[in-house]
Image (cartoon, rainbow, N blue to C red):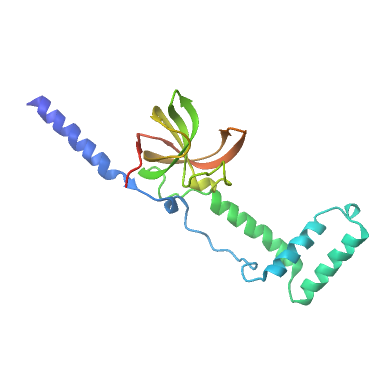
Length: 214
């Protein structure tokens, strides 16, 4: 009788543990965006291009510019000012926009940290034992970090799974389950003709890695 009762307790605990696991989606990994002023959003493409050209000139040392380049820079500034643009103010706001976008790309969502979650994605192996990946990045799209630029840091999860998941190659689709935590780190990604480092904002010691099914 005692054995039966204990088995029932463990079974109920397993059910409760499963019930506490929340399925999330990639959008859930990004926090709600903080508002910021973006004066570039409504500008014409020609204005944006001329601003970029002027910035390129003005971030070089004067000695690096020949007379034609200096004249072009002066003409660009004059034309943009004549159109009512505060060129220096726009250059300052550019830094604000860049910082806001960097923060949005790197900051984890505090609302999901410490939760047991289930998330579907693609395996980008980092460390193998035989044919099993014991450490990998979970990424939202096929080709991420290798064939196309890496996703934002808060759109990737560094996964440790000592049991190993048998992979057939790059980007096997899987479900991962475990407690998600914040850990901003640079991870080395190796591929056939080189290597690179990518920034990752999440980490997980996975309790389960399973082939993806609907």
